[in-house]
Length: 164
Image (cartoon, one colour):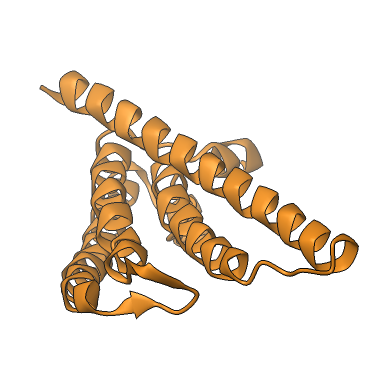
């Protein structure tokens, strides 16, 4: 069961990281497009600013699961280094519970904002609902929750291990 979950976790984390990379590509491409249209063609495309902002938001929330999986988000390095194996296991559980609580709040309020934002349109993109911008919070939160559990089952602390 553990191996099946870790396989699913690897797939979801890789998918979210791929999505984050694609959002970075979108943001940088739109940024270049905006520079060309504004300073070379002298006809700025205002809609690119909004899409750059949305893609950066999505990028961050899709990249967070990879950081959780590597144990790089919430770290208690000194306590982790000084404690024994049982203490480390206890710290891992405490950090996972605290992280899951935070992610649960983000998912809850992110979904609430997304559903409320359905009726609001994006300035500069009149036909696009704010739902799509706010949806990054619950989607990233769900991916993050899977990564947190994956890190609890199979801890990855490469930086900490090499520092010893």
